[in-house]
Image 1: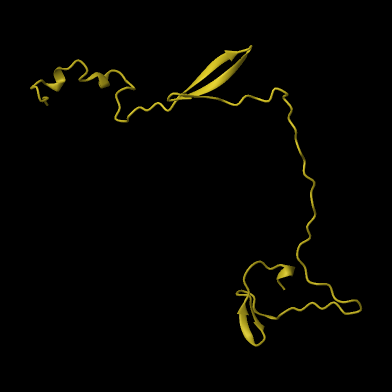
Image 2: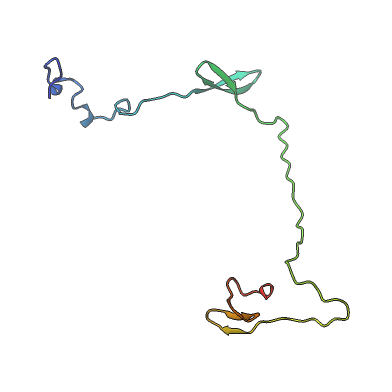
Length: 125
């Protein structure tokens, strides 16, 4: 291959440099610098500054009190939903629909055949 001036690319000193060394500058991606971090010593302590373009932003510093406060929440018991209890003096009635097929969990409700889905729990009765 030759360039527009008629010179051979293989005659260039960097023609086959990739075979012997790796250079990070030789890539197809554009190199962008978003900003830089600077550590500056101020009044016996160090501060970190973020510089982006011509703006310098100080990074937050640790709380000098070094107080770590842990708050522990108490457990609150929330009962599971259950049926309304019977009125005083009334008999506790468990209404169970007869299951027609154990495999498909099909039952009859008000003359209609209904397939039960979901977990088999006491709350699903």
